[in-house]
Length: 284
Image (cartoon, rainbow, N blue to C red; front, side):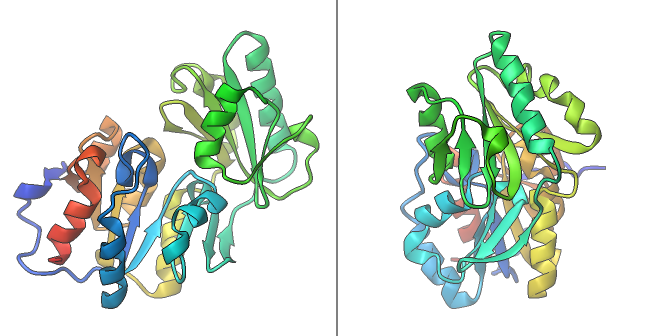
């Protein structure tokens, strides 16, 4: 049974002094970033202090590795990036783990999205490879959304013909993805994960791929326990990641399922919730 989350400022289980936290993992959109997609200015001095204390800070996002590496370029040395919803984990430019799609799955998802678009749904596929993300739509409205998450993207005539090691297919729906695109992709749920990762995004990945699996692998590699791990999330693609940490926090703005799954509740992404919680728990 999920633990009912308790508000940060009134949590009996929080220690009076600094906790033994060795790893902090946070989602980006709706969690660390505010609604304007801004990284809080206070993060940079906090990262320096965490590094001094030997605490590893790791962004975990549906965003592309190239995008995350660019956002944290000045502090990226030694940082682990859990990218593409856990399908691609990289540290200092070296792949730690990946979970690529097999066979014809990526092309089949792309063709399904084409059929959905032909029926009038305002939707487009982003086929995510290790080298780049590939799209067929070239209109500015769609590309503006792609640029937010995929710094390295290419417009191609046929995404089903691209040669790369594909790790995920992300589908952007200008409408509510949970009600339109997700049901249309349900046929893939028998063999793969179909995850609503945001209000307008649905991701198709291997069943074995999620942020939680990536985090558990990282914990094993580093010898860090769930009790030494703090995690923040706000949406459905964060659920498994929350399960991998005893210090699991849903943001106040989180999806109801995420709130029910987390142990504790942090202030919202617009209230600097991640930084405030880290400061509170670690005594910064």
